[in-house]
Image (tube, rainbow, N blue to C red; front, side, top):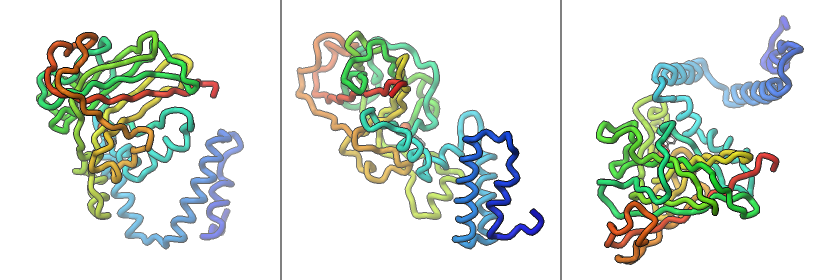
Length: 291
Ligand code: BEZ
Ligand code: FE
């Protein structure tokens, strides 16, 4: 096209795609170019504004390394990560939610009933539940990878005081799909805000807080892997998670239990908890890969 105009630029862009372009890539680019070009036209983006946007992306690139991916965080605070989760979820399975940057691979295998809390202060929380399919059948042997913040609000990878697998563990569901462990309540914390994402949040009067949560990755052969989070129903940031990760079915109440009622066996802490404690029940419902 020799005479490219603001009206024909989208068609021109599409006409440049080669005949062997992957059909899905073509579909994605057709929609992307159409929305992006409309966005520029309708918003009447100026040179200065576009320059600022590109500088923000460059800063995101500069700050990104093996440990920190600012593009993922940008996608999170713009609501794109959560939107991708939502449009790819199934109403009968547990909702998925953001992975976040603090998962540590190869967490140690832990027996059912193991304890994350160790010497950390705070009330004991007994977390238990079942891994099931959408018909309610248990999924024995499902692998449940769980991680959370320590009571100081830090993940192990952010905290020199913790060893790398602190508050991380991999459980294997028993023949009934059951899993259980003990921990302390995770706490609300802020997403990294010393880079371009922080600048964007600041410029738009947004805070960087997330409600406290437990992270889960649940996997079983023949089922779609579930990446999700579980939130307490009394967290002050529940209605304003800066990365839009909260879903109704992921909000659970911690049930206070009287002193002297901690299970006498089956837990690493059995026989060691005399005080009151709380219980959190969370079942993970996985989608069969054929569904
Ligand atoms: C997290 O939950 O760990 C997290 C999620 C998204 C962005 C930053 C942190
Ligand atoms: Fe998190």
